[in-house]
Each structure stands twice: as structure tokens, then as C-alpha cells.
Image (cartoon, rainbow, N blue to C red; front, side, top):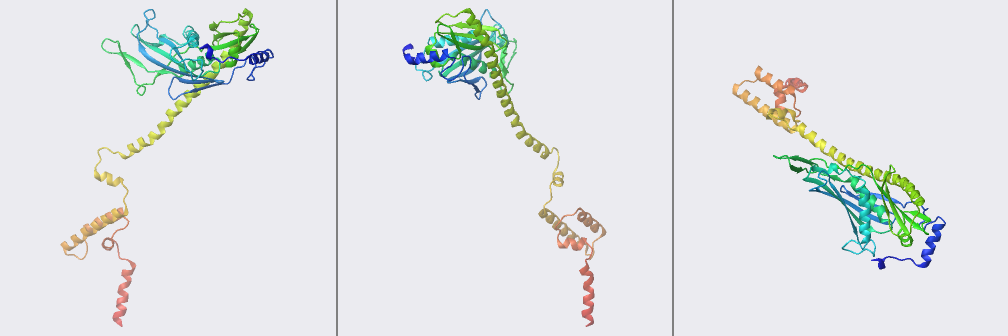
Length: 393
């Protein structure tokens, strides 16, 4: 594994060391500057993607119900698993994890689990029988240096957005666990007390030169490394000093002070990214509601209970064709009654019936109904005069 790792030449090593002595780095940063940090999230809860410079790490969180340990019957479990792919670095071998993968998992596990960052008692469902086992999978996609810090941030971001299903206990004996579907009940987030941030330092020149967030090439030249896990309150959660050159205690204290400042800055970035993710997700749920509300209103207005056909006809709008058909039917009934009675004029009851229907008014009545029910027009009054003139001639 080590023979495949990139090894700098003598000129490259001298160039990097001489630049560091002048407080300059190959990528243009100062000694205590982090690379550009980018945090993004996937479609599902509990997935995160972190880019720290050229380093690319993917984090994914899952959970399942298991039986707890005997010495901790009312506490859940948290496990960290790492996967190093040859795609990220030719030095990584597929299959069984190597020394780098084991060291990375232990450093992150020590910072998260032993510092009690996640409330384990809140993961208990039935004491001694059922607890939630949370698993964090970290996939290294590209090794650009400082994998510990990038993987730690990916784990914290994934844990912050993870939601576990809600459970209830019931049954005859009161020990039966019912896991509710996310559509029935909203999943619950994890209880995270604080965020332990890992800050890695690299030492050069017998420990006299210290830099933060070493790159891939700087890790090949460095003489030693130390990782300090500190939260935003300044509490030291864990310290990992890898092999190499020794470091004086004064230098270690200086690194811890710098790490506390960097931890507060990174914590604010993680919280800001998580807040924007939760806000965006909440807005997507709200946008679906207005599309369904108008449909419900329309249905309630149209549907009528216990109403006959007569009430529906009165509420519907009358078209001209319907009015004409009704007027024709009315005229035929009037004609039939007039022929049966053999009277030149309509009776008072028939006149009254026609007046009532015409006053209700349908546009487009037939001419026969108008002649019977309506008074004589001006033309009818003038016609007899013309006839009289013709007769006189």
C-alpha cells in the first residue's frame, strides 16, 4: 500500500519546506487557513456530501432496531464505518480496510461517541429489548489531503439531517413495538448536544512549523500530525497524535487555541447549511397544499345532498334552447285547451296561467304563445283602417 503512494522528489520537498518557512503554502494559503468548504445534501434525509478543497467525502446515516448491550440496556448504539475506494487514491486497496481506514474510523468514533455528542438514551424504545442502532457510512470519493476533518464534517452534517421513524409500544403485554410509516407520522430527528469538530495540524522542520488542513502533497512531506476534536464551547473531546516527530507542550497548547476558533467557525457553517436544507424541504411540503385546496372547494360547492331534480333545475342556468322548448310545450297545451272548450278566447284561468309563466320570463318564446298571452301590437290596431279605405274605393 505504501509503495503506491505518491512520493515527492527532492526538489519538491525542498520547495514545500522553504515556502512554509516563509509563511507561504503551495496553494496560496497562510499557515492557519482552511481550504474552501462546501456542504451539500442529498434527496433523502441523513445523506451529506462535503468538499474540502480537492478532498471529497460522502456520508450516509441509517438506523435499525436491535437488542442493546447488557451493560447499557437503555442506550442505543452509534457505529462509524469507512470505505476507501481506489478511485479516490491508488494507494487504497479494495476489500479489507487498511490502516488509514481503521485510523480514520477510530478518530471520528472517539470524537462522536465518547464525547456523548449524540444522546444515546433517546434511542431506547424498550429497555433491554429494542433500541436504535445508528450507523454512519463514510465513503472517500477523492483524496486531496486531510481526510479526517472532511469525514468528520460529513458525519456531523449527515447526523444533523437524519430522521428516524417514530415508534410506539403496545400489544397485550405492552412490549410490542410498532414502527410507523413516515407518511403516517413524521420521523424524529436525533438529539445532538454539541458538534465535536476535528481540526488536523501538520508539523514540519522538527515541529517548529505548524499548518492547518494539510493538502495531499503536504502530508507526503510532513514530519508529524495531530488531530484535536473540539466543540464550539472550547471543550476538548479527543486528541489524536500520530507517529512522527515529537511536539513541545507549548506548541500543543497553541494548536488547541487555534482549533477552538476553527471549530466555532466550522460549526456555524454546518448549522447554516442544515438550516437552509430544512427550510427548503419545508417549503416543498407547503407548495403542495394550494394545488389541492381549490379542488376540495369546488367539490363541496357542487355536491348537494338530499335534493331532487326540481331543485337542480332551478339552480342550473337556463339556455335559450331549453327556454324555447318550454315555451313551445306551453303553447301546445294552450291550443289543446282552446280547441276542447270551442271558445274563441281563452278562459280567465288559462290567461292567468300564461301570465304567470311569461312573467317568469324565458327569452325566445314562440310567436303563438306571444299572440295568445300578450296584448295586441300597434300593427294590429292599424290594419282595420287600411281595410276600410280599400272597401270605400
